[in-house]
Length: 334
Image 1 (spheres, rainbow, N blue to C red):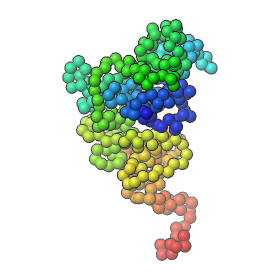
Image 2 (tube, rainbow, N blue to C red):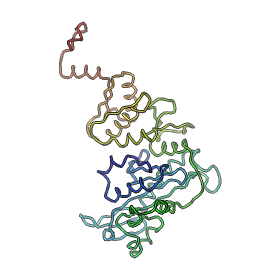
Image 3 (tube, rainbow, N blue to C red):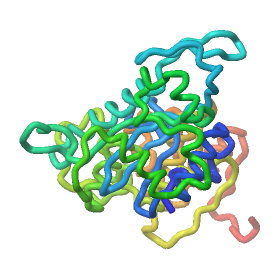
Image 4 (tube, rainbow, N blue to C red):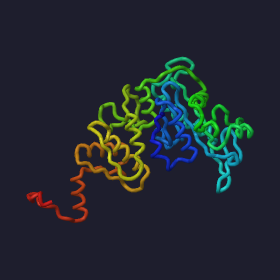
C-alpha cells in the first residue's frame, strides 16, 4: 500500500469524487515504496498540484485530476481550455499545461542541488531520476477520449481515463499508466538520504536544521549554499502533521519523537489560513523562546504568539486589572 500524505481520511472532505476514487486506487494499487502527496504546496509558492507520485526506482510524477465530463469541455488547445460551468463558459489552463508548470516548479528547485543532478553529459544539470506529468480524467472513458479526438491536445499516453482507474484494474496495468508518462526512462534507485533531499526541496515546511536544532530552518529563498547534510521530518511525522485536520488534538510521544516539530508545523499552517492570531502556550521558558524566535524568522511573529504559561497568566492579570497574589501567600490556597 502506498503512503498518502496527508492520510486519506483527513482530506476526504475537500476532495472531489474523482479525487477520492483516484486516491483510494493509489493506496490500493501501488506498492509500499510509493509516496503520494495530495494538494500539498510546492516550495515557498502557493502552487498546489492535485497529486505528486514519487517512487525511488521509477521517478516523480505530477498529476492533475479533472472530474470534467465530455460535455463540460467546450473547446481546448494545448495551452487553454474553455469549460462549461454553472456560471457559463470559463477559460482555464489546459490540465496538461497546468501539470507541466507544476512539474517545472519542482524540477527548478531540485536543479539547485548538485547532489540531485547529472554532473555531465546531455542531461547535465537535470535531476538524475525520471520525472514527468500527466492528467487523470475521472469521468471520461478511453473510447470517449478517442472519439472526441482529445489526443490532439492531450497525448493519450499522458492521460488516465475513467475506465482505466476502476477497482478491478490489475496493479501492474494501473502502474504501467504511470510509467508511460515518463519521457525518459532509465534504471536508478534513490537512497533514503536522496529521497529526503528531494522532500527537503519540495516542502520547506518539513525541514529541520542540520545543526541538530529543531527549528533553525534554512529558508529556501535565502540559502546561498545547500548543506551537504539535510534533515527533514520522517514520513510518519510528516503524515501526522499534514493529517491533523481541525479541532482538538493531543499528540503523545517519547522525548525526541517530533512533538514540537509537529506543533511548529501546525502553528505555521494555521497562521497561513486563519485571520485570528495563534497562541502557543509552553510550560518550558526555553522552548517558548525558541519557538518565538522561529516564528519571527518565518515572519509570523504578528500572527503566532508564543509565551510560557506563567508569563501568559501574568499578562492576563495585567490586562484585566486583576491584582497579583503577594509572593509570600500560601500557594496551597490556590
